[in-house]
Length: 290
Length: 234
Ligand SMILES: Nc1ncnc2c1ncn2[C@@H]1O[C@H](COP(=O)(O)OP(=O)(O)OP(=O)(O)O)[C@@H](O)[C@H]1O
Ligand SMILES: [Mg+2]
Image (tube, rainbow over all chains, first blue to last red; front, side, top):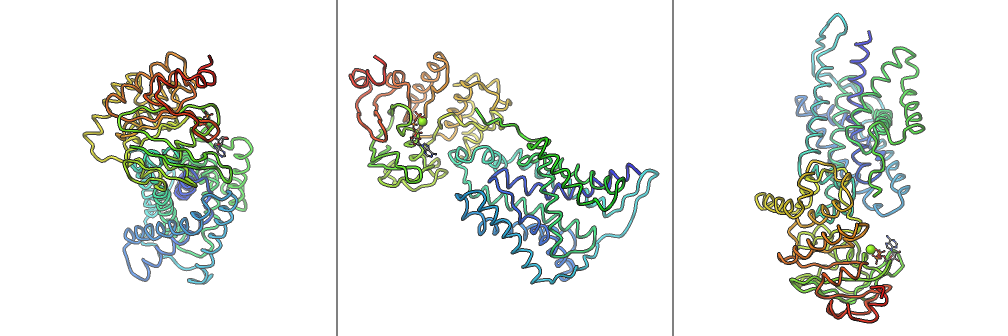
């Protein structure tokens, strides 16, 4: 029972982690909570669903294309809703983020209506049993894809020229530009990667629950945000850890307390973190202060 | 090489620089001295593109760079070591230097320059993997200069390299500044420590509240009564 809950928690948590990465990366670079991120996730799920059902694309191709589409969308949102406000007070950008979120929800309602749509699972319901737990083929695939994406991202950030430039930009934007780093380009790349990961989460959750709807991004969006804060907003390993922990906490809460508290758990965690350790689990102390 | 003419800049509506003009020729060390808050840092930040001039022009190698963004200015050959060093604290020493060479693609030459920086600053060589935020103040200043050299600048802008360092460390840093210059890099040096700045530089400008009030050879400024009273504490 316990092992089973843990596994279920990790599966759910890995999707939260993917969403949290988008929040944390964007926050790291421009100190903005991108409230439209949940909608990017939702659009990612819809794109994947449409590509698979109407265009009959195989799952890997649909996933990849959904990620690319969401990347373009995230970049567009930044360009239209945030870039013009780069030098304005932070509240202005935050309001613009909420505006972008509402706009995208309504765009989805307009395009696809409010009724949930079926997302057929591309995988056979094959279940592997052991004496402690059972796991389906679909669940394994979700786990593998999430972890590959996270490992890939970590490698990219740690080792590539652009990854290093992203870290430098997150630490000191002006000085990064003095190194020859084009800050606008880094911001664009950050939105593209964050959105692509969010879309991947959307597609994975879509095939898991086999349904998509225009409001599906709201709650996971908020939970991804909570996961990012739990891990320490701005920290990439923090977002991964925060996502997994949140997933485990939620599944455990449902199993041992009550399923009515499913969503409340995330927000209870948010309040606790903000009260006792606002910098999060992997949060950075103010190292920059000389 | 660098020609600043009637340059004015400010923050919001407060004018900080009032029509300043200065030139730096190839091979020189030129210093800009002045007390707290007169606009020295603002001058360098405007040259490197972080601030936009409201008036006047900046030419580098006969190209107008007054409205060129900072990342393009590095590519043209100007490298800026900011006041307070601003090394990237959570990157390693090695990564800081790699970022310094961000504009370059010539891997072999980058490697050579990396070695060269390690020779100039042997203290850094031992600490390549260390997080830069854990370096001492002097080491951070060395890293900031090393990082700037990694772009192979033709003109190096140095903003108060002596700030917060022990006298002996300051002497070491200034020896290195002279050596870098001997090896062919032109330098514009901003300092509050007029004594050491004027002993290091060939020429100097004296700044007071947003204006240049004196310019002369470094020796002449060292002898100048006004400078001696106001900046050398005599
Ligand atoms: N970001 C800013 N916003 C508003 N005013 C600023 C800003 N930075 C500097 N100033 C003002 O501009 C003036 C010049 O500042 P600057 O930093 O160029 O002086 P400085 O000569 O470098 O001084 P110091 O020797 O203390 O470094 C000061 O009056 C300062 O208060
Ligand atoms: Mg200054």
